Image 1 (cartoon, rainbow, N blue to C red):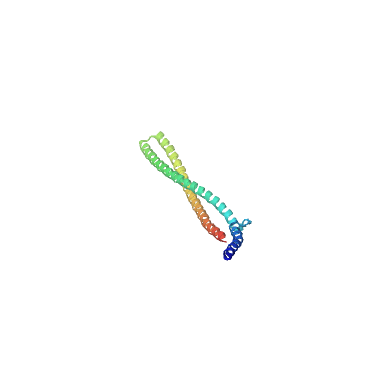
Image 2 (cartoon, one colour):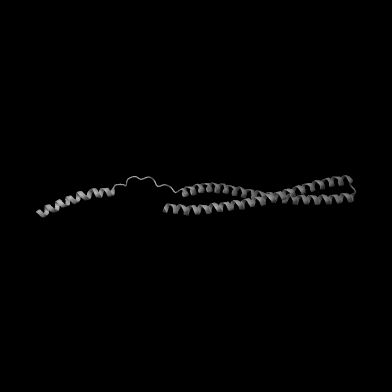
Length: 171
């Protein structure tokens, strides 16, 4: 029985020593201050937000430039049609002028000359419009290329920032 008593008493002593130690291990750790953020990561995040805003604006610019390009192409097409019709009118007026000269009709000759002058004026105006529209088309294409370049740079910066974030969180 002495053994039994010794065993129970020693068990009680061990339990008394072990239970508080076990509870101490399961309690949550004392609250600590939040980790201080890395200033470089914060700066990178700010730059990323700025780059995202720039990217959004570049996308808007790209869409607008594409619309402008489509509009300029339509303007060029209509200017070419106008030039074609003005040339046709000019040729018809010149043929009519030759017929009226051959017939000796002086009134019709004066009228034909006035129509020819008007058609030539229209033709010059249409050529100017065509030149202007071609120039606009070139500048819109140039803007589109620049915006695409900006967009590539922002996307590249986004990838670099993602790698920096992963490296900062691993610290």
